[in-house]
Image (spheres, rainbow, N blue to C red):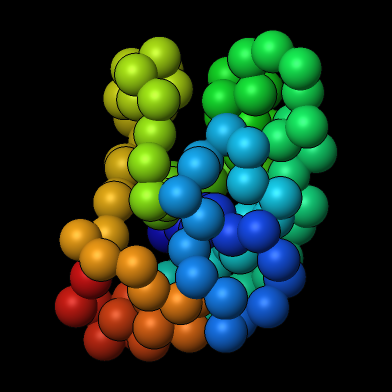
Length: 107
């Protein structure tokens, strides 16, 4: 399973972004291989419909799950229609903390 974690920098010590569609980066974490990589959110700077464009961008990367601090209403509906799981952490966490929880399956 590939999880896209929203962030504003490509640094594991940074917190998860509070904004899914307008985040600057995604950390893609593969739970099967435990590999990860950063990809720049090319849709994040769109003047309109950044959330929708971000979803389409991530679908091209074959993600299964998205994790962010907040999702817009339309974005939430579209992700559910595409059968993409949504995870919202209960408190602010760094990418390192999230990935360690994923490795231990305690998210």
